[in-house]
Picture 1 (cartoon, helix red, strand yellow):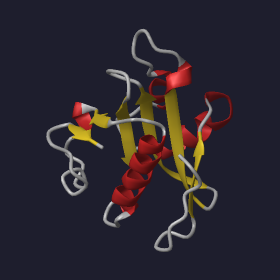
Picture 2 (cartoon, rainbow, N blue to C red):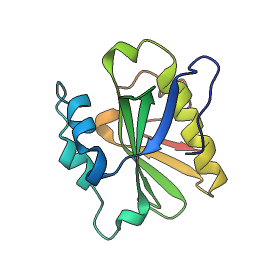
Picture 3 (cartoon, rainbow, N blue to C red):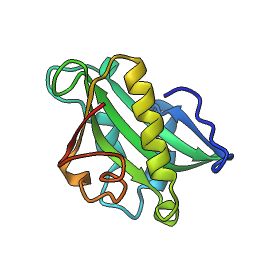
Length: 140
């Protein structure tokens, strides 16, 4: 994703996470969730490489508060698959999730992605209907 700036969330920024340097941050964020940091880093669909995987860390100042795990050109070319979308519980009531998703969608469109799919486990996220998902897919 390009640089993220939003007037409502001036302290939020995004960077790609790396298993070599960010595993401890991710373990801390996911400590009270069913997600495992190593599994998030290692998830790559069969037949794809790490070149198609983008694990974005959502930071408030220097604190990791969320992640968005996106696989490009999966399940088909010109689509993107959101494997994980996790925001710290105390931030879920804000419009941060929706704002982050819309920034991701804009970046995806600029790179030629025409549809987004979301992991079935994430279909209960409250902002999905608001941003136009039908079931677990959306044309963009």
